[in-house]
Length: 287
Image: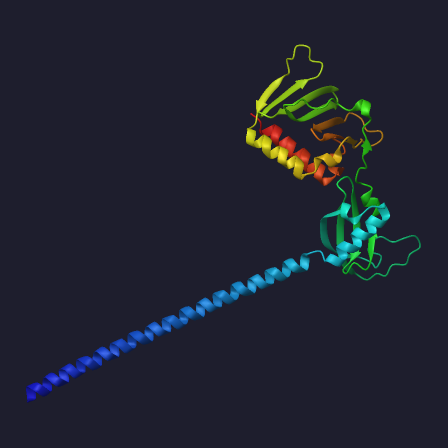
């Protein structure tokens, strides 16, 4: 009997000890789970909060539609064109130093209050206009002086247009003038050859032939289409009066010709500037 009781107590103690161990393991596991869940909830909350703040920041910096409409309608009225022909190409939040949005009219009294608003750049692809507005668009003012910094093109006389491109030519640049007064012609062919010659070089000693990939040629052609290069057909952006020793560039695609100079290139329409940069990048990457 003593042996049986002893065995019973030993067995019971073992069961109790095992139960205590299991209970402890479950407690620790539960605690870890709670901690993990709490940490996960904290991380998720932080991410959600950050996303909400980011969305709010983006939303607050976006140009309000009423402001955009007010500017486009004002410029369309001034130019006598449809607002659909205009595009807002840049804008920034601005705090104006007076109630006249820093553009006072003659004999106008301007309050000295700070006015939150927008600085907006509008383009028709050929010319840019600068606008100052208040925060809601109820007041819009055209910055005439800044807008005059954008060049106005003139039509190239038919007698001065270069000959059309040959069938295998994708693009052509003719540069002339500068100190040396020389004229160079560079053509891009469909097969990727980039050929540069000096006009009037009797021995053809300055001819160079380099190459880009056919894929680069195709990408450049698509870029011309996206940039609406055809909008500049037969237009010239002349140099300032009295300027000297500048280089004139004449660019020709199958859709037409445009002319500009190195002095005024920074005042060209943005679309045309991007075409010039893409062409220069292609030319310098040729091997």
